[in-house]
Length: 294
Image (cartoon, rainbow, N blue to C red; front, side):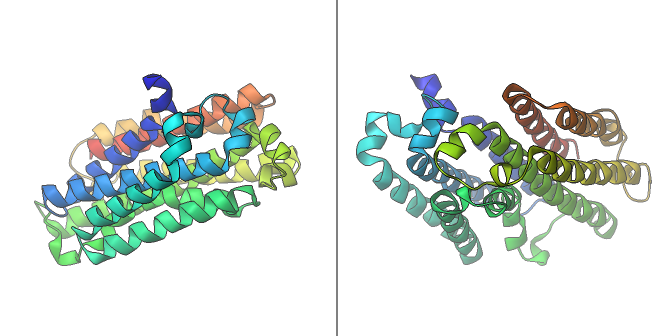
Protein backbone atom coordinates (compact mmCIF):
# COMPACT_ATOMS: atom_id res chain seq x y z
CA UNK A 1 0.00 0.00 0.00
CA UNK A 2 2.74 2.46 1.01
CA UNK A 3 4.71 1.63 -2.13
CA UNK A 4 1.63 2.28 -4.29
CA UNK A 5 1.06 5.67 -2.61
CA UNK A 6 4.69 6.64 -3.30
CA UNK A 7 4.23 5.67 -6.95
CA UNK A 8 0.90 7.52 -7.22
CA UNK A 9 2.37 10.71 -5.77
CA UNK A 10 5.36 10.54 -8.16
CA UNK A 11 7.69 10.67 -5.15
CA UNK A 12 10.71 10.18 -7.40
CA UNK A 13 9.79 13.26 -9.44
CA UNK A 14 9.45 15.33 -6.28
CA UNK A 15 12.90 14.22 -5.12
CA UNK A 16 14.45 15.13 -8.47
CA UNK A 17 12.84 18.60 -8.33
CA UNK A 18 14.00 19.15 -4.76
CA UNK A 19 17.53 17.99 -5.58
CA UNK A 20 17.72 20.25 -8.64
CA UNK A 21 16.61 23.32 -6.72
CA UNK A 22 18.92 22.62 -3.79
CA UNK A 23 21.96 22.11 -6.00
CA UNK A 24 21.30 25.26 -8.07
CA UNK A 25 20.69 27.43 -5.03
CA UNK A 26 23.83 26.05 -3.39
CA UNK A 27 25.84 26.58 -6.57
CA UNK A 28 24.85 30.24 -6.80
CA UNK A 29 24.89 30.64 -3.00
CA UNK A 30 21.57 32.44 -3.02
CA UNK A 31 19.66 33.06 0.18
CA UNK A 32 20.00 31.58 3.63
CA UNK A 33 19.58 27.90 4.41
CA UNK A 34 16.10 28.68 5.77
CA UNK A 35 15.14 30.45 2.54
CA UNK A 36 16.45 27.57 0.43
CA UNK A 37 14.42 25.06 2.42
CA UNK A 38 11.30 27.24 2.18
CA UNK A 39 11.71 27.44 -1.62
CA UNK A 40 12.19 23.70 -1.97
CA UNK A 41 9.30 22.79 0.34
CA UNK A 42 6.90 25.24 -1.31
CA UNK A 43 7.80 23.97 -4.79
CA UNK A 44 7.41 20.33 -3.76
CA UNK A 45 4.00 21.06 -2.19
CA UNK A 46 2.74 22.87 -5.31
CA UNK A 47 3.90 19.93 -7.45
CA UNK A 48 2.28 17.39 -5.10
CA UNK A 49 -0.97 19.37 -5.16
CA UNK A 50 -0.73 19.40 -8.96
CA UNK A 51 -0.53 15.60 -9.01
CA UNK A 52 -3.63 15.41 -6.80
CA UNK A 53 -5.78 17.64 -9.00
CA UNK A 54 -4.49 15.89 -12.11
CA UNK A 55 -5.54 12.50 -10.70
CA UNK A 56 -8.95 13.94 -9.81
CA UNK A 57 -9.68 14.98 -13.39
CA UNK A 58 -7.94 11.91 -14.89
CA UNK A 59 -9.74 9.27 -12.83
CA UNK A 60 -11.37 7.55 -15.81
CA UNK A 61 -8.36 7.94 -18.13
CA UNK A 62 -6.03 6.44 -15.52
CA UNK A 63 -8.19 3.32 -15.39
CA UNK A 64 -6.66 2.56 -18.81
CA UNK A 65 -3.32 4.38 -18.75
CA UNK A 66 -2.32 3.90 -15.10
CA UNK A 67 -4.51 1.16 -13.64
CA UNK A 68 -4.45 1.03 -9.85
CA UNK A 69 -2.24 4.10 -9.50
CA UNK A 70 -4.73 6.96 -9.27
CA UNK A 71 -4.78 8.61 -5.83
CA UNK A 72 -8.59 8.81 -5.83
CA UNK A 73 -8.84 5.05 -5.69
CA UNK A 74 -7.96 5.46 -2.00
CA UNK A 75 -10.61 6.25 0.58
CA UNK A 76 -8.85 9.29 2.05
CA UNK A 77 -8.64 11.06 -1.29
CA UNK A 78 -12.20 10.08 -2.23
CA UNK A 79 -13.46 11.76 0.93
CA UNK A 80 -11.02 14.62 1.46
CA UNK A 81 -8.87 14.83 -1.66
CA UNK A 82 -10.04 18.25 -2.88
CA UNK A 83 -9.88 19.79 0.59
CA UNK A 84 -6.37 18.37 1.01
CA UNK A 85 -5.45 19.87 -2.38
CA UNK A 86 -6.64 23.33 -1.28
CA UNK A 87 -4.81 23.13 2.06
CA UNK A 88 -1.58 22.09 0.34
CA UNK A 89 -1.67 25.08 -2.02
CA UNK A 90 -2.33 27.46 0.88
CA UNK A 91 0.55 25.91 2.80
CA UNK A 92 2.83 26.31 -0.22
CA UNK A 93 1.94 30.00 -0.43
CA UNK A 94 2.74 30.46 3.26
CA UNK A 95 6.21 28.95 2.79
CA UNK A 96 6.71 31.07 -0.33
CA UNK A 97 5.69 34.29 1.42
CA UNK A 98 8.25 33.56 4.15
CA UNK A 99 10.91 34.13 1.45
CA UNK A 100 9.40 37.10 -0.40
CA UNK A 101 6.33 38.21 -2.36
CA UNK A 102 7.93 37.32 -5.71
CA UNK A 103 8.08 33.65 -4.79
CA UNK A 104 4.50 33.89 -3.51
CA UNK A 105 3.29 35.08 -6.92
CA UNK A 106 5.43 32.55 -8.77
CA UNK A 107 3.94 29.67 -6.79
CA UNK A 108 0.43 31.06 -7.15
CA UNK A 109 0.83 31.24 -10.95
CA UNK A 110 2.29 27.72 -11.07
CA UNK A 111 -0.55 26.30 -8.96
CA UNK A 112 -3.13 28.04 -11.16
CA UNK A 113 -1.48 26.77 -14.36
CA UNK A 114 -1.41 23.21 -13.01
CA UNK A 115 -5.15 23.42 -12.30
CA UNK A 116 -5.90 24.84 -15.75
CA UNK A 117 -3.70 22.17 -17.30
CA UNK A 118 -5.44 19.33 -15.45
CA UNK A 119 -8.94 20.65 -16.13
CA UNK A 120 -8.65 21.82 -19.74
CA UNK A 121 -5.23 21.96 -21.37
CA UNK A 122 -4.17 18.36 -20.84
CA UNK A 123 -6.64 17.24 -23.50
CA UNK A 124 -5.68 20.00 -25.93
CA UNK A 125 -2.99 19.71 -28.61
CA UNK A 126 0.40 21.27 -27.85
CA UNK A 127 -0.73 23.62 -25.04
CA UNK A 128 -0.80 20.94 -22.36
CA UNK A 129 2.67 19.65 -23.15
CA UNK A 130 4.06 23.17 -23.25
CA UNK A 131 2.60 23.99 -19.83
CA UNK A 132 4.20 20.88 -18.29
CA UNK A 133 7.51 21.75 -19.95
CA UNK A 134 7.27 25.27 -18.49
CA UNK A 135 6.56 23.80 -15.06
CA UNK A 136 9.64 21.60 -15.48
CA UNK A 137 11.76 24.68 -16.15
CA UNK A 138 9.95 26.68 -13.44
CA UNK A 139 11.66 24.52 -10.84
CA UNK A 140 14.72 26.72 -11.41
CA UNK A 141 12.90 30.06 -11.69
CA UNK A 142 13.05 30.85 -7.93
CA UNK A 143 16.73 31.66 -8.51
CA UNK A 144 15.53 34.81 -10.30
CA UNK A 145 13.63 36.10 -7.26
CA UNK A 146 16.87 37.08 -5.60
CA UNK A 147 18.36 40.47 -6.30
CA UNK A 148 21.69 40.39 -8.12
CA UNK A 149 23.31 42.01 -5.08
CA UNK A 150 22.46 38.92 -3.02
CA UNK A 151 24.88 36.81 -5.06
CA UNK A 152 27.86 35.71 -3.03
CA UNK A 153 30.20 33.73 -5.22
CA UNK A 154 33.75 33.10 -4.12
CA UNK A 155 36.77 33.72 -6.29
CA UNK A 156 36.78 36.03 -9.27
CA UNK A 157 33.14 37.04 -9.19
CA UNK A 158 32.98 38.29 -12.77
CA UNK A 159 34.58 35.17 -14.31
CA UNK A 160 32.86 32.58 -12.14
CA UNK A 161 29.47 34.25 -12.35
CA UNK A 162 29.81 34.36 -16.13
CA UNK A 163 30.07 30.55 -16.23
CA UNK A 164 27.39 29.99 -13.60
CA UNK A 165 25.01 32.32 -15.43
CA UNK A 166 25.49 30.46 -18.72
CA UNK A 167 25.16 27.12 -16.93
CA UNK A 168 21.93 28.25 -15.24
CA UNK A 169 20.29 29.25 -18.53
CA UNK A 170 21.53 26.07 -20.17
CA UNK A 171 19.87 23.96 -17.43
CA UNK A 172 16.68 25.99 -17.81
CA UNK A 173 16.71 25.37 -21.57
CA UNK A 174 17.56 21.69 -21.04
CA UNK A 175 14.76 21.18 -18.48
CA UNK A 176 12.18 22.82 -20.75
CA UNK A 177 13.05 20.82 -23.87
CA UNK A 178 13.45 17.44 -22.17
CA UNK A 179 10.20 18.05 -20.28
CA UNK A 180 8.41 18.85 -23.55
CA UNK A 181 9.87 15.76 -25.20
CA UNK A 182 8.91 13.45 -22.36
CA UNK A 183 5.33 14.73 -22.12
CA UNK A 184 4.77 14.25 -25.83
CA UNK A 185 6.25 10.74 -25.67
CA UNK A 186 3.97 9.94 -22.71
CA UNK A 187 0.98 11.17 -24.73
CA UNK A 188 1.89 8.74 -27.50
CA UNK A 189 2.24 5.96 -24.91
CA UNK A 190 -1.14 6.88 -23.34
CA UNK A 191 -3.03 7.57 -26.55
CA UNK A 192 -5.34 4.57 -26.04
CA UNK A 193 -6.79 5.92 -22.79
CA UNK A 194 -6.77 9.52 -24.07
CA UNK A 195 -8.87 8.54 -27.09
CA UNK A 196 -11.51 7.02 -24.79
CA UNK A 197 -11.69 10.37 -22.98
CA UNK A 198 -12.03 12.16 -26.33
CA UNK A 199 -8.82 14.07 -25.69
CA UNK A 200 -7.23 15.96 -28.56
CA UNK A 201 -3.56 15.76 -27.68
CA UNK A 202 -0.93 16.29 -30.35
CA UNK A 203 -0.20 12.56 -30.24
CA UNK A 204 -3.82 11.88 -31.28
CA UNK A 205 -4.36 14.78 -33.68
CA UNK A 206 -1.15 14.21 -35.63
CA UNK A 207 -0.07 11.06 -37.46
CA UNK A 208 2.67 9.15 -35.67
CA UNK A 209 5.06 10.01 -38.49
CA UNK A 210 4.52 13.74 -37.91
CA UNK A 211 4.91 13.41 -34.12
CA UNK A 212 8.12 11.46 -34.60
CA UNK A 213 9.46 14.14 -36.96
CA UNK A 214 8.74 17.00 -34.53
CA UNK A 215 10.14 15.02 -31.60
CA UNK A 216 13.25 14.25 -33.65
CA UNK A 217 13.77 17.96 -34.29
CA UNK A 218 13.42 18.70 -30.56
CA UNK A 219 15.84 15.86 -29.77
CA UNK A 220 18.39 17.23 -32.23
CA UNK A 221 18.09 20.68 -30.60
CA UNK A 222 18.81 19.08 -27.21
CA UNK A 223 21.79 17.19 -28.62
CA UNK A 224 23.18 20.32 -30.30
CA UNK A 225 22.73 22.28 -27.06
CA UNK A 226 24.47 19.61 -24.99
CA UNK A 227 27.25 19.30 -27.60
CA UNK A 228 27.77 23.08 -27.72
CA UNK A 229 27.96 23.27 -23.94
CA UNK A 230 30.30 20.26 -23.85
CA UNK A 231 32.76 21.84 -26.26
CA UNK A 232 32.49 25.19 -24.46
CA UNK A 233 33.71 23.39 -21.33
CA UNK A 234 36.97 22.69 -23.13
CA UNK A 235 37.62 26.44 -23.23
CA UNK A 236 39.61 27.08 -20.06
CA UNK A 237 38.63 30.75 -19.95
CA UNK A 238 34.99 29.64 -19.78
CA UNK A 239 35.36 26.84 -17.25
CA UNK A 240 38.62 26.42 -15.41
CA UNK A 241 37.92 24.66 -12.10
CA UNK A 242 38.57 21.07 -13.16
CA UNK A 243 37.88 18.47 -15.82
CA UNK A 244 35.25 16.27 -14.15
CA UNK A 245 32.34 18.22 -15.66
CA UNK A 246 34.01 18.07 -19.08
CA UNK A 247 34.20 14.28 -18.94
CA UNK A 248 30.69 14.02 -17.49
CA UNK A 249 29.17 15.85 -20.45
CA UNK A 250 31.44 14.32 -23.07
CA UNK A 251 31.09 10.70 -21.98
CA UNK A 252 27.65 10.67 -20.33
CA UNK A 253 25.34 13.60 -21.16
CA UNK A 254 26.12 13.69 -24.86
CA UNK A 255 25.87 9.90 -25.44
CA UNK A 256 22.62 9.47 -23.50
CA UNK A 257 21.10 12.44 -25.36
CA UNK A 258 22.03 10.83 -28.67
CA UNK A 259 20.68 7.50 -27.41
CA UNK A 260 17.28 9.12 -26.78
CA UNK A 261 17.11 10.13 -30.46
CA UNK A 262 18.01 6.59 -31.55
CA UNK A 263 15.28 5.15 -29.30
CA UNK A 264 12.80 7.68 -30.70
CA UNK A 265 13.54 6.72 -34.30
CA UNK A 266 13.14 3.02 -33.48
CA UNK A 267 10.02 3.24 -31.27
CA UNK A 268 7.00 1.35 -32.61
CA UNK A 269 5.05 -0.40 -29.85
CA UNK A 270 3.60 1.08 -26.66
CA UNK A 271 6.38 -0.55 -24.64
CA UNK A 272 8.98 1.22 -26.81
CA UNK A 273 7.45 4.58 -25.96
CA UNK A 274 7.37 3.61 -22.27
CA UNK A 275 11.08 2.79 -22.39
CA UNK A 276 11.81 6.07 -24.15
CA UNK A 277 9.82 8.00 -21.52
CA UNK A 278 11.83 6.28 -18.77
CA UNK A 279 15.07 6.99 -20.61
CA UNK A 280 14.22 10.68 -20.94
CA UNK A 281 13.64 10.77 -17.19
CA UNK A 282 17.17 9.40 -16.75
CA UNK A 283 18.47 12.10 -19.10
CA UNK A 284 16.69 14.76 -17.01
CA UNK A 285 18.13 13.32 -13.79
CA UNK A 286 21.61 13.28 -15.29
CA UNK A 287 21.22 16.97 -16.13
CA UNK A 288 20.23 17.73 -12.54
CA UNK A 289 23.18 15.74 -11.20
CA UNK A 290 25.58 17.80 -13.32
CA UNK A 291 24.71 20.82 -11.16
CA UNK A 292 26.24 19.00 -8.20
CA UNK A 293 29.46 18.41 -10.12
CA UNK A 294 29.84 22.14 -10.77
